[in-house]
Length: 97
Length: 97
Image (tube, rainbow over all chains, first blue to last red; front, top):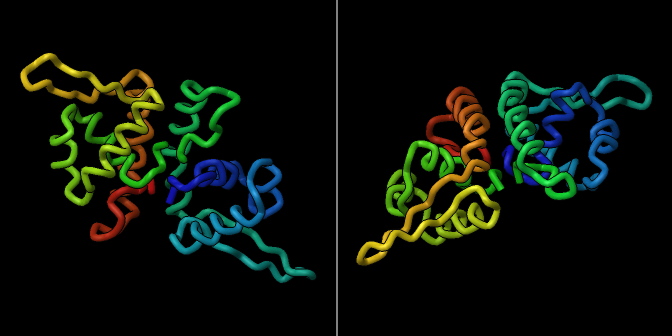
């Protein structure tokens, strides 16, 4: 689950407080909306994220980390630290893939 | 790289001191030799593992973590801690996939 392409980076944005689709996609320029949507659906099915529909007009969709999702913080942080040290800047930005 | 199926579990075994192909495969009953070989080749190409041929008769092959590989220890540990808490025992044993 955390191993799929971009999963680690998406989690990092959620952990930084992003809750809206556009917030997350803006923070990850290289990801397509289709892939981001797939990853968020997968996170939802695995209980890492919950999708909340707010009764605004039009409705607002928020993606919120569950306790299970928030508990990945340490792993995501350690992977980011590793990536900063060991991955070339122009190369792979998602160390988890 | 750490995100591919079984990658996290293989790294964990290497971090625990396994250096031989059979040691690693015995520790991960569900992995095929073909997949383990692929993963080790990938780790080698990414500089996480080095493959050492010892001049015994027949030769002995050892897989040793590089500094880059050993630096993944914290991330692998955090993922294992997360998995023990959040993943069903009968379910996914490799939290990274």
